[in-house]
Image (cartoon, rainbow, N blue to C red):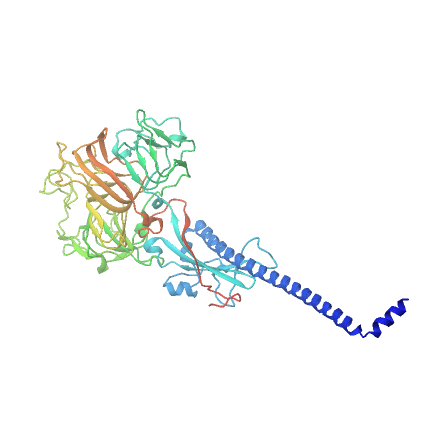
Length: 580
């Protein structure tokens, strides 16, 4: 029967159609299979490419973090890099190879890459970075370009790294107690939260009228009476609420969020690092600053110049530590009666992105700038105006009719041989002024251009807002109010108003910048909300300090670098290491 049926079908001539149908179905199935395989393979390639793209960016981030860790271990690592790297060359940076080879400094086809620890052995993540330290001296910022490599994919990031430290805060203190130089009490400094009591220590408070427009940090416990904080507040106190309230006062207003615990930030012990910036024999000092000796007055002028009077100065740059030699570059002025020692001082250009340092007159005989032989004809005298017997520094301090706060022989207010600087005026430029003893702000100290100008004031001892009074406690000054544009750091003492207890109400002290100090410095006395003497506070944070710093501004004992700006840029290298 079956044979009959097949014979019948074949006889009808349908066998060709069946064959075509079978072949067609086979072709369709083959195309579907091939398409599926192609799609799967393409998906694998796409996934691989996407994975490598993401991983290479992560490797670039890892490179930035690895460079940060090197800076944390060695704060001087900003000096190192590959001098031949394109990014370094184009920025005009000055770098040298480190003593221990760093593969991340590779540049070019034949140069190495650093490997991200823990990455795949079959397809390791690698990175390179190039350093731009051309802005470090002026702003404290290091720019790093990092390129990540995974497989055949590269991606590049540029990051600005800035030291994290005192300039992160409008107001920073180590101890919330009165500065010992302003108190007759014998107080042993300790953090309130770490001891049972602090006998003979006077804790200063933030008062009702105080409004702080920026972040605040204290290693100690803040004492607050109804004050207003419009920025973040942190303390070293480990116990909530992290501050103490004054009895009878309303609660403080934390408009920037509640107070929080944060790590203790260590103060440097000295500002002598600034003096190092005035030496000509230190290779890494790219822009040598100006050294002045003994009492020195500086008035900044809005045209980028400054008038300096410094009668005791002999050499304005030195070599050796202690100094064994030196020079007198014209940029810092001419020592002696015809220049820096003259009655009117000498006008020179403000050192650009550099340092001015005023040192004590060296006591050792025969060393540069020592007092063993006075400047001939400079008229150096240790009398006050009018030639009276009152001790003075020969530069007009104390002022006529002024009663100096201290006339002690060990540390007088206006020591004739002390490294005190008296500063005022309008700055056009970027500079840091340091003093081995006191800094006195004797008038308004302002920026000519608030966008570009930047000032640092760093004293070993106190920084005073000059406020002279007579023996009967009346003010010598004829004006009120004071403005200071600067980042302020007192390494061993405080920022305070001179004679703040007397002399009557002086108006408002406006500070645009940042304050860092070991002890709390007082600026006024009040009765309720009424100012009775000194100045009311108007402290404003200079937000530029989130991204930049005055030249060579000092950092905490332990410091780290935070990233202030991230940006992905065009690729710097091919996967074979070739420069693009």
